[in-house]
Image (tube, rainbow, N blue to C red; front, side):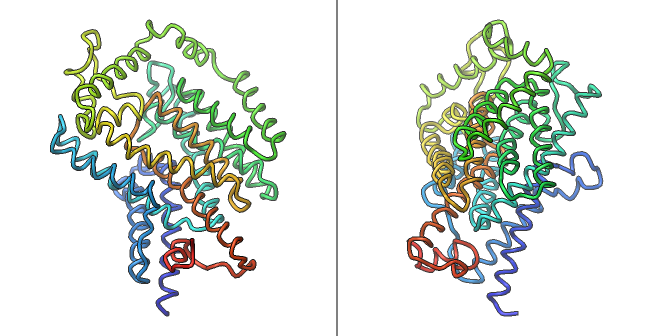
Length: 428
């Protein structure tokens, strides 16, 4: 086998491993199939994908694509988290958080290096949609049997889905992707039915979580997708059907919990958020540049919380969490990363090749970030995979524009990862 063929094969296997990781991220088989737990499938598939990607790059003497300013923003953010051990309120937690962020950075870079064309982008998004069915069914089943309900009525599941808010926001990003496949003309009817089922189950699971942030995020995501979709009438019809289903089938407890927003002073959960935001504000005033260290927000609670806030909470807002833990320096780096990936998805929405899936990704990003305004999970693999997919869509769209600009005939565009072409000096 010639070296070029070897590199191409490694690239293909890296893509397979990345697709498997995206599926495992939702199906989490190790959490409910005991015999698979020791395999640590999420870690295994991500390491295989990243390792094969790096080996291929080294084998062909190609530079690793770092995704420009947004990639460097994420790298800088992760390195700052690692360095925060020297000033953190809790050095051990800061060390763990920094190392986890480096792993998530590796996942992001693997996504933007491996997903090099529209087909690969659609396959990974499709694997997420399909695997989410497992999560949704798990949540719904636990609710039906009354197992481990939070506060006696809020559904959840295993692993990272044990927190109803976290579970809801991770399913919010699935719904626009699923409906995009449903609305995609030319897709096999079996696949469209499967995606419709995935979307419906995800919405049901979000409702059963009774997550107010999840409900708002879902509304933002679906509204944005329907507004920006080119086949707007069809998109509005699909969105209206979901709203009607929500109105008809949502349990009374769901609406009752959402109504408590108006009287948040009497809601312990809502007041916990208010206290957390006050803590973030006081930390920012005391340590504006570098914060209290990665992962140390709760450990600084006693020093900065008002007297009536006896229980320590997480920041409940990803941006305030970053400000509190890594200061305005960290926020600038995180915004460079998150803003660049989000903007990339919106820009790619105009692409003829990947516009349909990029519009869904931009809606997913908007919905996810809306949820994160009320939650705040820096160490969520779903976040970095979603932003990686958004950045990959942008990169594919730019490559397609270059191809059209230089007048390369159909079928003669550069073969292999976009990064290989860009690294050769032929791309702008």
